[in-house]
Structures are given as C-alpha cells and as structure tokens.
Image (cartoon, rainbow, N blue to C red):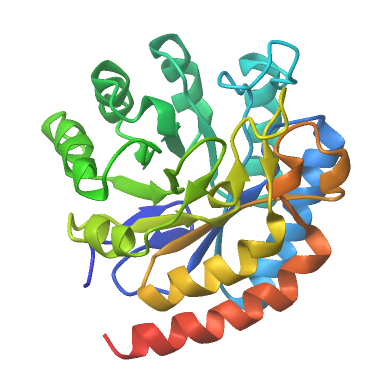
Length: 276
C-alpha cells in the first residue's frame, strides 16, 4: 500500500520512499554522549543514503521504579536536542507526557512522540496536533492495530494530517511482548507512514524487577521481518555501551552492530518497494 508522504526537515517518510531510521539513546544521559551517538548515526546514514531522525527522551515518565533514571528534565534536555539539531542538521523527536510539556517541546522538536501508554489520551493527542508538528503515536501494548485509526482521526480532526504510527509489540502474559506483523499492514491502511520500533518490541517490561529486561539478540530478525512486510521507518534505541546505559540497555543496540544490520535491511527494503 502506498501511504502519504510526510516531510520533516530533510527527511521524508512514506510514499514508497526508502526506509528512514529513527535512532538514538533511550534517554539523554549527558550532552557529550548524546552528541557522539548523533554524530555516528549522521555519518552512517549519510554513507547509506537514508534519512535520519535523532531520538532521545528528555524525561521518561513511565519508568518501572521510583529510583530509575528519568533524564535531565525538559529544559536541559531540549537544549541538548536543539544543539544536536543545529550542529548536525538532523530532525529530532522526543516524548511528551503531559499538556504542560507541549509548548516548549514544539519550539525545538520536529516530531512530537506520544508514548504507547498514552496513545488513547485525547487531550494530549489534540494538543500535540494543534502545534502543527508531525505527531508520532506509538501503539499501546494494550491496543489492537485497528484501534489506531481512532487516534489518527482525533489528530486529523484537529486539522493535522501529519501522523506517524509506531508498532512496538503487544502485551503477551506477564513481562513479555510479541509482535503481530499483520499490524504493520493494518496500520498502513490508515494512509499514515508506519514505523516499527524493533528495540522496544524485544523489551521485557518490568522483567528485571525494578527495571525492564530485554532481548537485543532478536532486534535484527524482527527488523528484517518488518521491512519485508513493508514499513516506512525503523526505530532503534542505540548506545555506545548498552550494558552501562541508564535506561533500556538490555534492548538497545551497540553502535558497532548498526552498519551490517542496516546494509542487510536496506537490500530488503529496496526489493519490497521496487514491487510497488
């Protein structure tokens, strides 16, 4: 299915265009690390000829434990994302968790991301839509793929048709997620570009007791499968040393894993899109 094109900065999603990579650390840990990761991703995607949107959260409001690291907060986090955007000329995306964050976030971010747990929050969706920014809605782990048509309708009725939909798996028993690849096809039937969040799809929510576990060894397989089904972007959380990451380390990829994985995936993406 051919979906609408959505452009943000120098990147275009959908319309049978080549795959876009949305990537970065789960959360902003500190400025130097954030910039190094962004520079690596920019260099790699430029070499491969694909678009990049840099993602990192300034605040993770839905951590497992009260003691979990949440990030630097909105003010400092947005300053760091603005620096990434300005110095590397890449669009940036981050999560917004409540209405109070949206005005300041919209001043910096190119894409406002609605977290999966908040994908039914009407007021949050409408406020994000009214900024005129691209809105990326992550499908709740508790929702069917066809339910996302309702989220799209809310945003469109606010006068904004720039909507991305992201699949990140569905709850399957306790501390586990599974991915139904049919959901990628179903969500694309809305006409919106679809993103597959492969690293959150292998997360084990709360699986480590006071934090989430993960199975990063399956990210490549799920990514290849999703691209073979037909998607518009891949979402990967990446880190210099995932075992030391302050958030989502068990499901994050090491930077040195990315080149070979992406080259393989882009071959599949080209084959699929040449058929359409």
